[in-house]
Amino acid sequence: MSLYSAGVEYGIHCLAFLVTSNGDTREASVRDLAELQGVPLEYLAKIFTKLAKGKLVVASEGVRGGFSLARPADEITLLDIVKAIDGRKNIFECRDIRGRCALFEGNPPQWAIEDTCSIHSAMMTAQKRMEEALAQQTILDIARKVGRKAPKEFGQQVEDWIQDRREKKGNVGTIPLTTLSD
Image 1 (cartoon, rainbow, N blue to C red):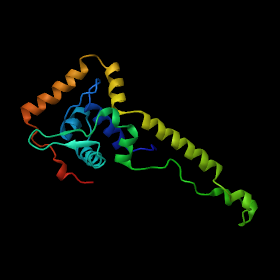
Image 2 (image 1 turned 180 degrees about the horizontal axis):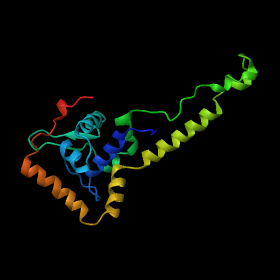
Image 3 (image 1 turned 90 degrees about the vertical axis):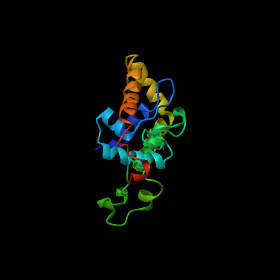
Image 4 (image 1 turned 120 degrees about the vertical axis):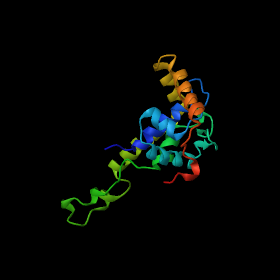
């Protein structure tokens, strides 16, 4: 079982397609991003509603409307995306088992239940470190990593693909932000 939903993965991938490896932004419709990546349109539309509410993307109106980043790519962290899509999730839920030991016969001694549970504390430390790591990575960092890994022409191919769809189809069927729901 994963901690974060598939929506987080979809959202990060989409935002990475909205920025070039040199930091320039591009605009794309949800429909185009879904088709480009082979992900479900309806689900992606819900994700973009959350990203817009989280002020990570903005919609432009019109036949060729779409979404673009709401702020520079180096100011949008992976943690921002996670929180916008999945909200705050704890990786561990302490059930306070430490006081249930059979040896205590229903009356746990103070030493066993005082302060924070050691296991809970360790898990919260792990969560803090994970969130710190996500907060240190921006969508621009991801786009640059993809840019270094992909063939040089890939970025231009993506740009051409999106532009071609916008020009030829006028993005008929683009889902405006106002019709998206949770």
